[in-house]
Image (cartoon, rainbow, N blue to C red; front, side):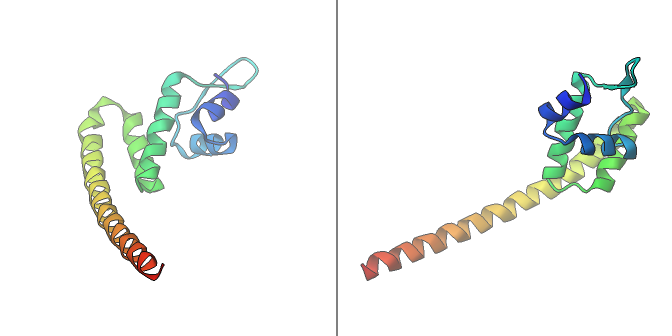
Length: 120
C-alpha cells in the first residue's frame, strides 16, 4: 500500500509517517520504480502497536529504543520482553491510580446529587 492508504488506515498523518521513517521508528519503506513508498500490512500492525505504546505513556525515546531492538532481530527478544514488562507495570499503576480517581469523582457526584435533591 502507498503512504496515503497507510495514513488513512493507521490514523497517522503522512508527515508523521515520513518523520517516523526518518528517525527510525518505522523501517525504511520499499520503493517502487517511481520512488514511491510501499508498505505492507506488517507496517500497519507495527504502527498500531506504536500508537498503543504512545497512548500508554511510553515516551518517544523508549519507543525508539524498542524499534531499534526490533530492527536488530530475534536476539533482542528478551530485552524487548523486559521493556514491555516494565512498561506494563507503569501502565498498571496508572490504571490503579485512575480507578481511585474515578471512585473519588463518583463519590463527589453522589454527594452533589444528594445536595441538589435536598435543595429541591
